[in-house]
Amino acid sequence: MLAAGIGTGVVHIWNEYELDDLECLDDDATDSTDTDSNNHSNIYVTICRCGAAYHIDIALLEQGIDIFPCKQCSNVVKIKFEWIPEQEQEQDEEEEEEEKQQQQDDDDEEEVDNKQKGRHDKNNHNNNQTSLSTPD
Image (cartoon, rainbow, N blue to C red):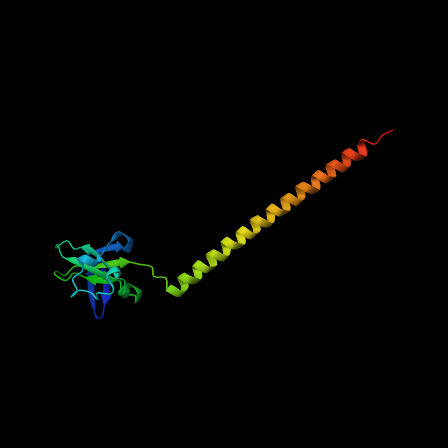
């Protein structure tokens, strides 16, 4: 069991979960009193040992809040979550696309170089044959 400071007290963390290990709450399973009806896909759940569910809100994780209490007992869970801001994610995707394009350009250039080298080698071979087969 882990301990984490919240405010002035200490909270004992019952368990830690990776966000990928949690179940995303479906739209039709959502109680409108628990969440904003426009953000159903941002809520993940896992079951507490008392039988109640922890509701994990992605918006809170993005704000750095990673400790969630059970609504029926004193258990608390910690969620392991690495948030990449949307702007950073877009930059990463753009950089990845640029790298792919650069690799494709390099491959294309190498292919052209190889074709030109092949023609050059063939021409040299033909010239060598021509010079060797001169009539007497």
